[in-house]
Length: 287
Length: 261
View: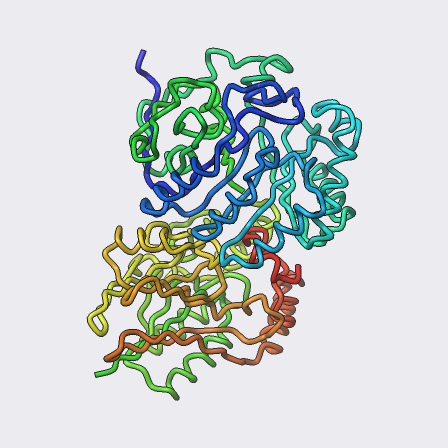
């Protein structure tokens, strides 16, 4: 059946790097790509991989760059990669916050100060406290993140705290306020918070449930205005296996669109449950 | 031959600053003055800005505010993503929508979305947010050169002018290529100073000169009127201190780091 809409690539503004592959120092029970210390489905990117795609992105006029994994700080070349990136555009790193040592935070601050572009660090949390967070992320994680956040605060870096809806009640006004208060208490006087829905794929499929058949997009045609809301109309994702349509579908072979960015400048058919979540929730993985 | 043009970014109902800026422009002498949209928002008595612009014969383009007000939309379509920003944006919009008279709303609907000019052999494009989207925020730290070059290419422009974000900046990205956010005269530039900014372009023999001009105005009078109108104390604090207190979650990391709140 060919009833699912195609989303055009309206503009290529954002390039993602799956910089740590699916390799992570923890194994969250809600991870949509089941990252773990042993998951080598996507390998780490090398500095040369990133530099090659940066050169291509520069010629295409890409606006901003995101680094994710797995845990990006497990990639030993992350800092030189960010340095190279910040010469041509703003960069954001999505991290679990466990490897934010003092020296690392100091270097991030130096890099941010030297560049004309913004550098953002996004730290993931999944609850208001140790108990709820560690239930998703594993024992001892909360305490290590708190050290990482302290190091960021001392370096004068104001992170964006990203919370998934696995944290009960975070979407409510009260939950949001509670989170903002927590972030203030950790030493960030200008608290920044982003809330993301869950994708029912990967580990999350086992934690809660898989997508049902009805959770698919069936509008035959999207207007440009509709398409604009979807991040696949303006971004692509580089992994060790090639360039994919978005950061979510990297374990879907059909979502691999080419070896280079240039090969992926075409529409994509929204056939997947995750596409339904993006559409219904208006999700953007961007900050 | 030299051409001098003045550009006014978001006015946000700050008719005190508008009057001061227009007087300053008259003193300096220009070939023409343009406004780039968002005539209403944080300030009081939204009819006074269109009244003044029409009276002085100033041409300009729609911002998202004029688009929303003229089409009867229920919100400003400012493009914020954080609930804290949207909360205050809605207060502004509801106040403005209720008090903007129907003839001015119609006039807003007739404004163009963009204007093209040619000065000193340069193709200049006036836009509100960006040439591609009325409510796009072009911040200095997230508008790198390769991206700006592409936007200039895609829109056949040597010089792109925009406003919407509230902070002025200029990047020269080639010998004859410029992108300028002209800033706003509606609220201060989040730098702890109460003045606002407009932009002067001078095109002559050696290309383009871009000058940001600070404007002092009677901000105490504006604050008094806002208080009488029962507008949020947060908006008034910004006028009195020069620091943004609302609609700032949208700021990128670098601009936020330089911000007090």
